[in-house]
Structures are given as structure tokens and as C-alpha cells.
Length: 262
Image 1: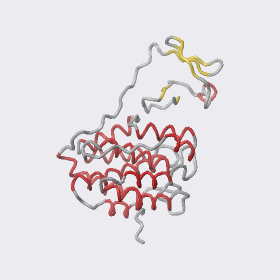
Image 2: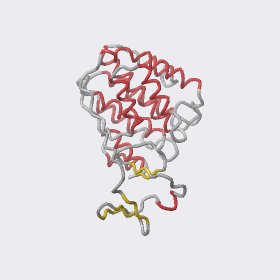
Image 3: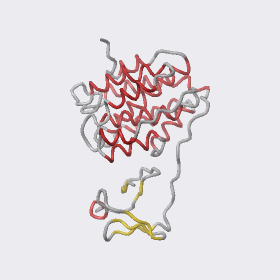
Image 4: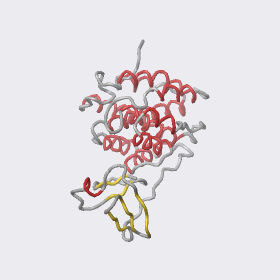
């Protein structure tokens, strides 16, 4: 459970109003219990839930691609261009960042082969190599993989593929507990409203809304938004390739600076 005084909602977030000293009320990893409509946190913090509004939105896997989905390739090229001109320092798009080379390898060894059926196992092997890669509250490798799996698993029904689910125990061995939990939520489509909007825009083939949804992600955290967006872009490009029998993901990866030409 995450507590914040920001407005972004998700199924695992408690959004608090007018709480300037949030860090004094709620501390990381404090025990939490429920007593009726009261949430008790730590020793002396009580949150009254009787008048709180409930956010239960959960992404449902897309069962059929809309006719407009065939046009989202243009949106992916636009946002890839945007990422080429904004500051992406220390994100996976920064060639000098800790996780960059690992993501390049993941794209070539894990994402690209996923166009072919039956390649889920090698994908998992490649994906595990980037879990925990990078620094920060949620390492860049986790953010890229989370964005990828949240997007890919949202569309697997429509492309007649099985969902890809990483073993949560292996995730916890490779990265921090909190980042592993967030990654596990994302692969099971327990997503915040920004990511939900991204999935809906792509599913509906709404090109402008998809670009806006991806751009809205970018300011999140230090580099988390950029890294999550990169994962989502790669997954959408791959789904587009599978659905239309194309090979455009190399072009998108190249535009992002993540295509290994060796």
C-alpha cells in the first residue's frame, strides 16, 4: 500500500489531501491494520475511510484490436522523436547510464524474438538480467520491464499469445522488495490511471491520446516515467508487428538508441 498527497490514483494507493508533513505520519514498512472504517498505521496514525472515495479501476485485457490500432505506428514514431529531444539523462536512453547496455541486450535477446510464438522462456531469461539494473527507488531495468509487461499482457488475448508472468520470488531476489512488488502489480495489470489511460488509448487506436498519455508519463520520478514509457513503446511496437505481420520494432528501437546493430 502506498500513501501520497499527490492526485494520481491506483488500486494500491491511498491519496491524502492537505498533508504537508506526510513523511511524519506514514513511514516506509510500518505495520498497517484495519478496525472497522479506520486504518491504523504504526503507533499513532489513524486514517478515517468512511467518507473516502474508492478507486477500483483495473485494466481488462483487450480481447480484440480496434481498426484504429493499425495507425498507432505513427504515434510511436512521434513519441520516439520526442524522447530524442527531451532530457533523458540517467534514464535507460542515456548511453552512459548504468542500465543502458543491459536494456540494449534485453531488446535484442528478449523483446525482438518475442515476435515468434513460443519464445516466452528466453524472454524471461533476458528480462531477469535487467531486474535491479540501475539505481533509485525503482531501478531503471525494473521500470522498463514493468512498462513492457503491463502493456504486452494487456494485449495478449488480442494477438492470441499467453501472458508473460515473472516469478515474484525471483524478482525479490534481484531487486528491492518495493520495486519487486510494483513490478509484480504491473505484470498482473494492477495499474495507476496514467498507465490505464495509455492502454485504453492504444486499444482504441486514438493516436493523439496515445501520444499525450505517453508524454504525461515522462515527468514521473527521476527517470521512472521515461523508463516505463520506453517499455510501453517497445511492447506496443511489438504487438503492432505481431498483429500486422510487420517488422517495425527495429526502427523504433533504433530511434530510441536501443537497437544493437552488431
